[in-house]
Image 1 (tube, rainbow, N blue to C red):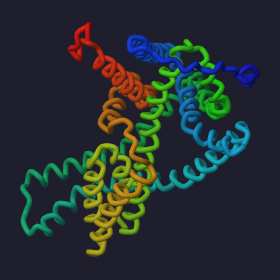
Image 2: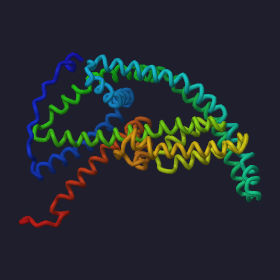
Image 3: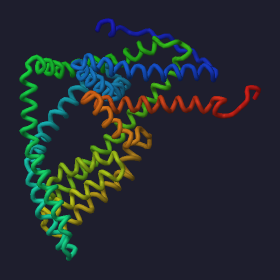
Image 4: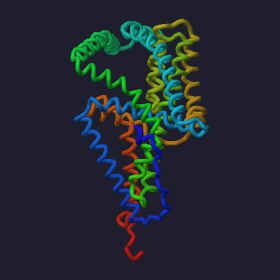
Length: 379
């Protein structure tokens, strides 16, 4: 690390004016290198899969926390000290969240079998009482079957997970390697974060001088798309989860925290998270009915959540930058998760961000060619 710690002397980039042909060639080379690099990364993951997860987690942590450390550095705090402060604060927040959330989610998980079991037997009678008519026998039968299947599935999830953990722990070598890998994640993340500007400077210093400005702009576009998603969708999801969970808990709705998290992060797909959250809240409302006031609390929770998301959270906290489309994120996670497992899920969003910019660059360059514009060579 001593070599990395040394200052990197990067020559100033000349302000060169590229011709359209040069810019097109640089952009196409950049696009090809990015796609080839992604293929190489996945090929290496297939060979060295055990090393991939710790390194990816460490790089992800360095990327996420780099803006905070950079902000402290601009305020006159030395980068090593800033990195230490961010790590200490992040560790305290993580430990506090884990100590609070694990018991909460454990208690909620223990209620799931009873929740689905009661839903299968109590929801239909309550709906019939509200509408004043009997529902078809097919709906009654399907509701009972779905509730029982969900209850059985949740009850079997615990033993199945225990068997998986036991089988994994039985392979002592793999278990030890995994533990060591997870243990070094904070160490790797600390050094990656501390040396982030130097690492980026070294990469930039290897680029051909005439292409530095354009290539740097392309990487800035990738960073903008990716950070817009992280700052945008995840921030909105986290804030909405807190709002929904708090409101439903005030309304004394069964499974309030689980429903709130589902509705909040489900907001990545427009209307889906809100729709599913309202549906689950109505089921929980029927199972924990204490009076008409609960209807007002549930309705108010989702109305306030949507109003805050539309008028405060998105425009004032997150901003209007467009990152990855929610549907593209879902498809990327499902596709890469199916192809490459857990590592594929970790890489889905950054890969989708890179491919979005690559596709946009290729389309832009194509739209400036004579083939697209129809201009003659003499024009």
